[in-house]
Image (cartoon, rainbow, N blue to C red; front, top):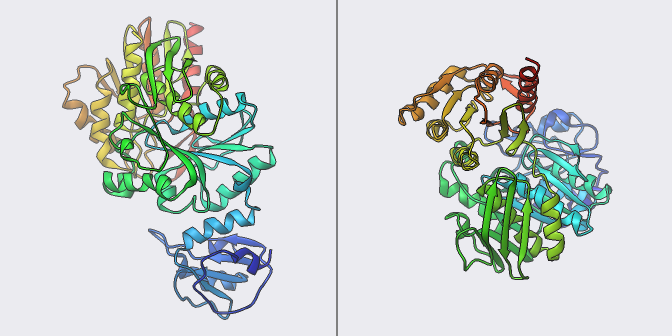
Amino acid sequence: MRLSHLLSGIDVRAASSKADPEIRAIVCDSRQVRDGALFVCLPGERFDGHDFARDAVMRGAAAVLAERPVEVGGAPLFLVPSARKALAELALRWEGNPERELRLAGVTGTNGKTTTTFLLASILEAAGEKAGILGTVGTFVGGERIANTGLTTPGPLELAAELRRIVDRGCTCAAMEVSSHALEQERVAGLRFAAAAFTNLSRDHLDYHGTMEAYFAAKSRLFSERLAEEGVAVVNADDPWASRVGAPRVLRFSLRDRAADIFAHELRISMEGIRMEVKTPSGPLTIRSSLVGEHNAENLLCAVGLALALGVKRQAIEQGLERSAGAPGRLERIEGKGVTVFVDYAHTDAALAAAIRTLRRLGPARLSVVFGCGGDRDRGKRAPMGEAAAMADRVIVTSDNPRSEDPEAIIREILVGIRRTHHPDVTVEPDRRRAIELAIEGAVPGEAVLIAGKGHEDYQIVGTERRHFDDREEARRVLAELSRR
């Protein structure tokens, strides 16, 4: 693709040359440069791409795009106000602007994003559309995972490639998780969402954002900057942060506020699932779902709001929600002889508390929780997560992804919160595999065991090593061994 075509429409403030080379790749890592590449200088927390511009040219870059003048040894240099925003727009153009062939629905918030996208995709499929899902657990089309970037919202180059991939698979719409990092770092610049939802906000990622206000401000950019002109915002009226979101067109959903646009009444939650009657601007709905828990009732309402915003008929909404099993690793149930295990991604104090409350209401004989906290991440949430875990009858504290931190040091910070509650039954086992064994082997008949923090993840990061580890596999292994005894 010619450079002039690639840069058409990009806010270029200055250019050192009128050269128009053929561009063979777009890269933002100088180590990945090959002949004919356009190198984009991205500012970062640890490294600044501007410091590697000359190296990129020496490796064969045909042109450089930057935010300030840099030494490029005579190669064409183009200056833009925001290299991150420009990269997102360039990536979409490079892939042939796949976003123009899709109706996009974005979901942001601390919890509920993944489940909501899976619910919405099921609704859209019931309505006769082919829907893609992009998010934490990967990229899905028709129930098949076709890629996994490892990020809630991938970087601009990967995101554009994923959008192209689902368009090439025949998708006409996509349900997409949009993280606060992605919004802050302009990964979704160039996208316009026909519908966007804000699920809730609780403490998370403050190691990056600093304050809750800054965290909220980042999330809010989905509505102030990325919502299409005729787009609809779908917000949780029961969450004090989400309810602050403003947009020209808003649908509010609620389990408590009868004045909300989408309101659930006659709500029934049991071990078998959720049943509720729902008031909507398009008429009443009867929702039946195999999911459990009040938080999943909120996710169901959020998906209803997004579907209505996209013009889906009521019958397809009801059918899609009844068919959906939700998202992998989100209160995923694993049945065993006399004990039921739930694997959940809950990795904040609010999410952990919600999961425990959910299972408590289902009436198990006893409730145990196995959890830890990630290393090299927000230390401020460790004690609060300990307090949340103390809502269970039995607590087993273990490792999550310790990364470069000492697992036992992380556990000590978690125990500070548990000790505030004077909980009588706490076990410390840094080995996560052994912790899961202790929880399940020590379960009484009718007990529910919650394994929290990793959910769908199939790895554990210890030091710099990424090892295969899947909570669901471990739970099934232990349950199978118990059944043979």
